Structures are given as C-alpha cells and as structure tokens.
Length: 102
Image (cartoon, rainbow, N blue to C red; front, side):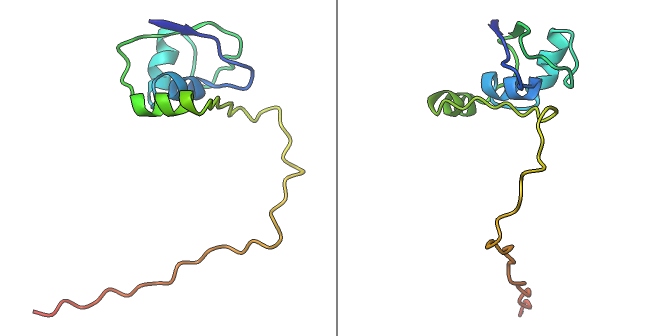
C-alpha cells in the first residue's frame, strides 16, 4: 500500500492515472479512502492499495515524462480561450463501400 497527497487541482481520477495507470481505479481509491470521486481531494493523504488493477506502462510513462495531471477546472475561467483563426476543421472524405463480387 502506498500513500499519496494530491496537489491542488488534482482529482481522484488524476491520482488513479498516476498511481495505477487506469481511470477505473479511481472508484477503488475513493472507496478505500471514504471519499467520493467528485470530492476535492487536494492536500488529503490518500492510500492506494497494491491489489488495485493497474497498467504499469501508463504509470511508467507518466513518471518518466514527469506528467502530473491536474484536471480540476472549477476555479478557472475559460473566457479568454479563443479558437485559432487559421485552423479549419479536418473533414475526412466519405468512402463508399465497394460491392462484393462473387
């Protein structure tokens, strides 16, 4: 069992991805720590059990690349975010299926 302290702005899902490599682990982490997956967990000491399903490649990728997700957007304003003017949406051409000839 390991203990982690989420940073401000981190959610249970962020912790699940960093420690287990799969978002589904958030539900086990929340239940084990008696919190909801929607609770603000910044600053709490959370335990992560060793028996939770994991994707070690994702955990290693986050660690090696120093990825620390913090997906809480509740205190942020997006009013300044504007789309880039020169970017056109990419539209894939429709491909008609070829008839099967027997």
